[in-house]
Length: 218
Ligand code: MG
Figure 1 (cartoon, helix red, strand yellow):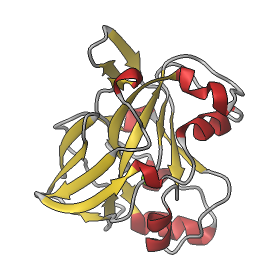
Figure 2 (cartoon, helix red, strand yellow; figure 1 turned 90 degrees about the vertical axis):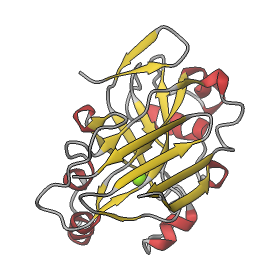
Figure 3 (tube, rainbow, N blue to C red; figure 1 turned 45 degrees about the horizontal axis):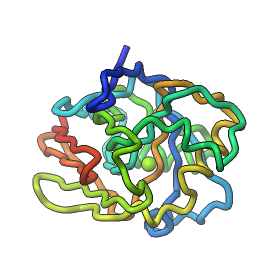
Figure 4 (cartoon, protein in one colour; figure 1 turned 120 degrees about the vertical axis):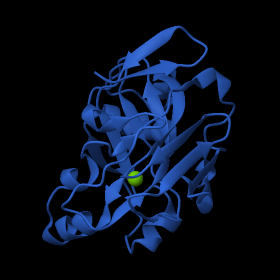
């Protein structure tokens, strides 16, 4: 079982399902040639895909193109089902930083065939995930700077103010489909600037005042 701390609070969560949004930043949707969707596009990663700060991403042998996507991670603290956007934030326990590792070549092949993305998105080590800071410590989750560098070279530098679907709406939308439980995590999508990493490189992902990850690639 994978667990994460809520920093400053003596509470540990066992990670449950990880529900992820695709194309939640217009500039990123554009860079991959995708339309900006009216409703959130969802996929999931299994809890077994989670690794922590300092752990390595291992690129599977069936891919030649593994991309980073830095994302704001939302930790669910209490169970909710069919919650309204007005009440959704009561169920958010904290915020963290994640990297949605994506086998872009595999995903593109699956997309072209209309097949599901799991083997491109949910493989072992595909979800580097920090501990979480309590929601009360984050003044505005829609005004956070998301950064990712490879070998110290800046690649992504975006702001959560550019999210198309915002956290209350996202939680409400997801909870109408999947009951959200304590320890579930939502990855809210990535800003523009995604690209490949190779074995031997090191990624650093940071959301100031939320978290930081240093993740080597093997
Ligand atoms: Mg993503």
